[in-house]
Amino acid sequence: MTSFKDLNLIPELLQAVAEEGYTSPTPIQEKAIPLLLDGKDVLGCAQTGTGKTAAFTLPILQRLAAEPAIVGKREPRCLILAPTRELAQQIGDSVTAYGRRTAITGTTIYGGVSQGAQARAVRAGVDVLVATPGRLLDLMGQAIVPLNSVRYLVLDEADRMLDMGFLPDVLRIVRKVPLRRQTMLFSATLSREIVELAKELLHEPVRVDVAPSSTTVERVRQVVYHVSRNAKGPLLDRLVAMPDVERALVFTRTKRGANQVVERLNLGPIRADVMHADRGQSAREKSLESFKVGTTRVLVATDIASRGLDVDNITHVINFDVPDEPDAYVHRIGRTARAGAHGLAITLCDREEEGKLAAIEKAIRLKIPEGEMPGKAASGRAGGHAGAKAGAHTPAAPHGHAPAHAHAPVHAHAPAYPAPPAPDAAPARDERHGPGPAPLTASGEEPKKVGRLRQRHPRRR
Ligand code: AMP
Image (cartoon, rainbow, N blue to C red):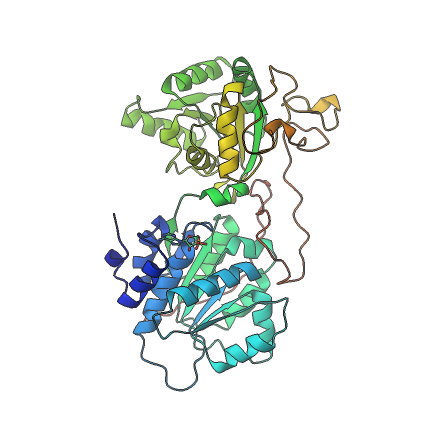
């Protein structure tokens, strides 16, 4: 197993991470730290909870520490932009914690509070400035924050920054940052917009991806159907026949189960294929290829396909069986809503599986709402209770929290399944606090165009 020492961190940082209680680097740290120490630009697809803050903060601190000591007043040499005050504060705390054994200084600026103390801290001189875009622009406008010395630029949670309407602000800020710099952009999803932005701002970036963490599964739209075991097959037939289902990954617990499901589906009009450990490597590769190009609309798989399966535009993940472990659930549903695409995770849960569902809901700290039965949309039933037909059962009360069947109906207009929530009204900049529910990526909307910022990348030092 890789250790922090293997990543060639300086003793001051090794000591700080040990004091934080970290024993080994997380996957994003293992991948990103060597690249960043090497001076590369990085486009990171990682969510909060993966350890991404240390992944960019540690190498920046190391590179700053290696630079000649500053004589006279310090101006920010590193700028980290974050969408919310809370995230900015967390990053600021990390900079302080990881940098405590070095001479590097940092401060955090954000809106919603008076600017006096923040302005004084910047004027006193800092190496690392963590900021939300609105407050930074305010202070830049008052000539309090100079950015001419910035050599390291980080855009954290870039997707949220765009969702919150900060793109123009971000572009205005980045224009003031010298081109001779190392840039890193982190985002939970890599939508077309984000990739466009990365193209504009990053120089030959290396892309680093890590699996979604349990804390961020809320980003995927999820529903559950409480049905009897016998009703699962007919329900699946109806689900995959819905016009929105362009590319679906169906998970079963066993290989035998996968074979049965695929046989059943292939009796109908939809082309399905199967992928599990009993099929040889080349057969699996062929199945995957057909799925990728769209010849196969439904791929039925066991959990071997849930990790590392890199197919964009999977519109639906359907858990025909509830997975045994919450982690497996997270990995399964992480196969959809990739690259900011349309995506929905559907779980079919029978009476015996209620305990497993409860464990999942507890782990992800989310009650999964019930889906409407497909084909019931035309019935005019307002707020009808999903799962009332087709062999539905009353789930046993899961332990520890409210019973799953106590969920409110997904919405009142009874479409085949829940529509994405309306986007939040954009509040004044910097006034949005708290992580709140992440914007769902399954909206199916065309991404907005990214404003152009022409940046020419000079040769690196
Ligand atoms: P982040 O994704 O950066 O918000 O980090 C999520 C949490 O993981 C934070 O509480 C960090 O303190 C913690 N963390 C970061 N790196 C490690 C590590 N290598 N080992 C254990 N915990 C870590």
